[in-house]
Image 1 (cartoon, helix red, strand yellow):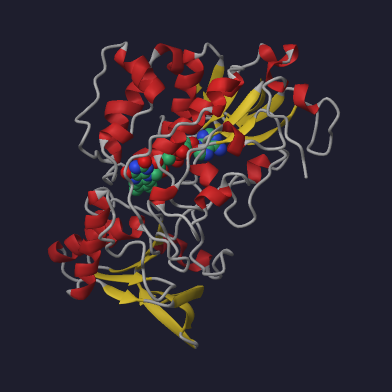
Image 2 (tube, protein in one colour):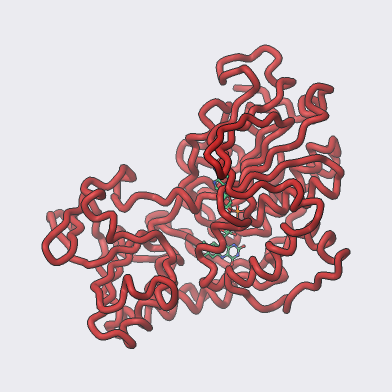
Amino acid sequence: MTLIDLTPRAVTAPRLATLPVAIIGAGPIGLAAAANLLERGIDFLVFEIGDDVAASVRSWGHTRLFSPWKHLVDPASRRLLESEGWTLPDPDRAPAGAELVERYIAPLAALDGIAARTRTRTEVIGVSRDGMDRTRSQGRASTPFSVRIRTASGAIEDVAARAVIDASGTYLSPNPLSSSGLDLRGMSEIADRVTAALPDVLGRDRAQFAGRRVTVVGAGHSAANTLLALVKLAREEPGTSVTWLIRNARAARVSSSPDDELIGRAHLGSRVDRAVEGGDIALVDSFEIVRARRVDDGLELVGHRRGEVVSHPADVVVNATGFRPDLAMLREVRLDLDEIVEAPRRLAPLIDPNVHSCGTVEPHGFRELTHPEPGFFIVGMKSYGRAPTFLLATGYEQVRSVAAWLAGDTASAVKVDLVLPATGVCSTDAAAGGGCCS
Ligand SMILES: Cc1cc2nc3c(=O)[nH]c(=O)nc-3n(C[C@H](O)[C@H](O)[C@H](O)COP(=O)(O)OP(=O)(O)OC[C@H]3O[C@@H](n4cnc5c(N)ncnc54)[C@H](O)[C@@H]3O)c2cc1C
């Protein structure tokens, strides 16, 4: 068993103390990490691949969140914003993603102390230790991190950092359509007819779906959101048909759960149930996708269904099969990840979707997020690996604890005191697939 140094000694060594903390991703959690570090007077740099902050939330900005405003704002960020005259929007109302950006994330990112340290259109492509690949151990903990970035102009730079907080989310690395988890055979033939999860069916992306046979693959709430938008589109645009293709016998996580305390989420489930019962959505269950092929009038998904080889025709496919963490850039970092969930090993038992629902996650902080690489943390959506149940309130407590640890305030770092919103029970059905928010 590897013994992990849980004291902040390593990241406060003299050689490191002058360097910034590198934060990967300017989503809500990366920026909350920035706010916590700012409050504690610790220098940092935020790298964001998108043209602007919160690029991923902007992509699904037309989608309404389930949580109300009072559970969407990080406490440290709120303190900083309120000192500049900001006020919390209606605490009991749930905003759409675009409003979350406009009224909270963008103003937060615009604060002087954060804006000056944020570099957009900058992709982190690798993390290592200065002059040390992952096999070198001597002096490792006191050696600066080396964060390799690709700038907007395409230039490659290595930036030295005392610690790294990876808040890059999972939105940019969707699961493949195939049931095996491997890249779908034949994907190149149909790629121009497959869209990522949460397309703006009634707005920006309408022309892609109007009058088409649309198949949504996946059993989570992203699928449900898209299905309901497509049902509306089908009423307005003749010739549009909607099929929901899932690999299990039942989409337990989406189908209405009367015990779901998040009203919006419960309604979503029951509306999908009604649309299926009413014939507006054709449900194809127990379909394991194996490969795809192009045919004259569209495409076919080929797979197994109840022991038979079957094919399913469509014009357009929405891939709502969920997301997975992109670990390629962390190849030189010593990680300790759970082999099932791909979350930090100590965190995984708390969130394993085979056991836990959205409502049962326990409070956790830097200790559960620690890897054998001192000073390196995965936080936010990415810290949940393949588990789809992440909520912002959890991530805000994660980064509060990590920032406290980086500041040497161990007492505050260990005192994780998460007041979780009433998130309700999505499902504890191990076979269901999908999840709370994916
Ligand atoms: C439709 C939907 C609804 C949701 N509803 C709720 C809800 O009601 N309540 C709730 O609490 N949670 C909800 N969530 C879950 C979760 O809170 C969000 O996904 C949230 O955006 C996660 O924040 P994050 O900062 O961890 O990741 P993200 O928001 O994904 O941010 C990661 C950032 O990192 C950037 N990035 C990625 N890779 C790199 C790289 N290599 N280099 C530089 N930058 C990079 C991305 O561009 C992005 O801006 C919802 C999620 C979805 C998709």
